Length: 284
Image (cartoon, rainbow, N blue to C red; front, side, top):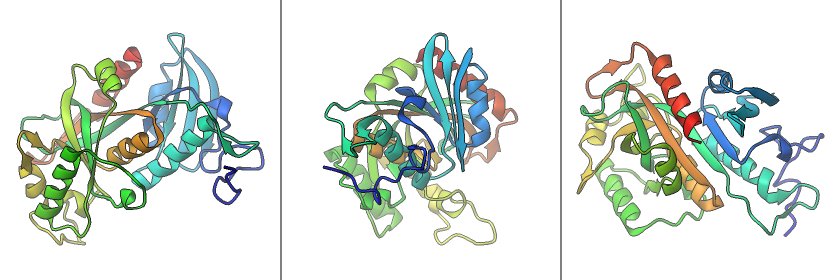
């Protein structure tokens, strides 16, 4: 099946449209960060730099850490940006840009998101390192994709839809078991809530107000057996759902910089994040 020019857009130099990358410029192991300024926080540990590309919020560095070829790139915020990222990364390794046909043999990338988030439970303190075993998306991205969910995933999202009074069913997807075992074996296991915004969707009230004044309390109190929501951010569910759809191994690990229940914020956020970065690099 040839993919038309209008569906897979390439730049004049043959690079993929938003990321501005050629297939040979990325590794099969990719670290992602949200903030473009955080790319250098990772790549400063590279012994050798091979590629540096920048377009919009997507900054990409490919180099070597302890002899292993790695790519680190920024995504900006939100699952809309993650959708661009995952689709175009997949295109780089699984579509022939000349014939515009999918390759017969598919490559599964390893994608590790290093992010920051806020805790929804008193027992998960500021400064913790948390791995998202499950991610629940409150955005509507998966209303447009044929995502298949397990029975337990559907049960979780139906209950959350009912308790929050949403007009759509959220989605729930698990992390790569392999990457959890390799990278996150000593991190707090978490169930991460992905929101379509930073303020009202996360229960923050500024001048715009809140439609649901009990939203943060509902997040905190949600239970289904032993399942509870542990932390809140804006990207992980997009990674996990598209990873499942496209066949890539994906893991999100989080530096907990805030405790939303106790109204605390880290005094040393960069130190916490740097500790997480080094752990990930050493375990890849």
